[in-house]
Amino acid sequence: MRWDVHYVEQTGSTNADVLALARAGVPPGTVLRAGHQTAGRGRLGRTWEAPVGSSLLASFLLPAEPVPFLAVARVALAAAGACRDLAGVDAALKWPNDLMVGERKLAGVLAEADGGSSTMVVGIGCNVAWPPLDERPPHLREGVTALSDLAASPPTAGEVLTGLLDRLEGWLLARPDEVLDAYRRVCATLGQPVRVELAGRALEGTATALTPSGELVVATGGTSVTVTAGDVVHLRASPPPPPG
Ligand code: BTN
Image 1 (cartoon, rainbow, N blue to C red):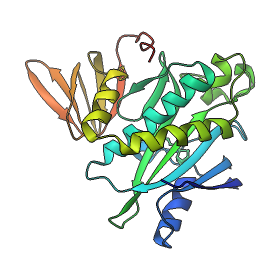
Image 2: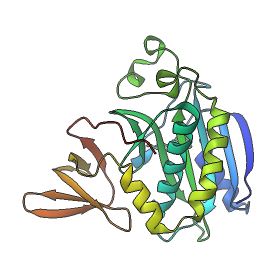
Image 3: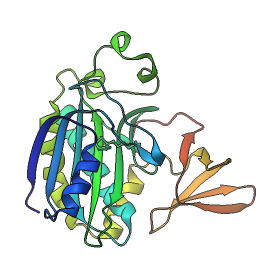
Image 4: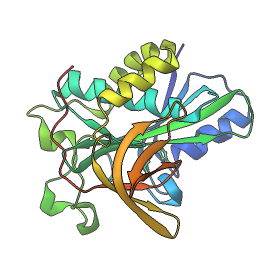
């Protein structure tokens, strides 16, 4: 993959911008990074907020995958590798798209289809250099962490992007089973008691497996439920993942 990286100081959403670029015909490998987003998009229709200049906010135009979860997994694994190698921070993955350190979120990944069949957009927001806790907006203090909270000399957002793209080249070449196995190894959700918040209801049980399509299997009350999308709450604090 030849990466063609662009930077803007501010935009609404890099995912929205790369979706528009895809419709205009730019090739896979196009990357847009922003210093700040005014309408950052999160999963399940949420917004994604970060203090100005504090985060890696970037979107990648990637080849479409028959299993879209694989694109999320490739980017999440590349980001976790970059955080480990550049900052010494071991992040675990919370199904489906979060990088976590303990129970605090370090990064989130969002895949969006571009309406065509050959490409898809995957964006990441990774908290890199956040202000001290008492200077953060109150609603961004709980359950959030940043590389600057965890590393003595954290990399810059640009360095994290370069490290991520280097590793993403390799993950884009990996077979689906290799990607899923790697995801399972660093997934803090598997084996955990969980509550999954679905549209209008919640499910409690133990997360037992990840299907080849990236769905989460939850054993509950003698049956197994396969979950395609939802918010997972880990009901037991997870230990840090093993190194490597
Ligand atoms: C999540 O809900 O955890 C996913 C968050 C994804 C946020 C990133 S920031 C860069 C890119 N542009 C967006 O509008 N969203 C993604």
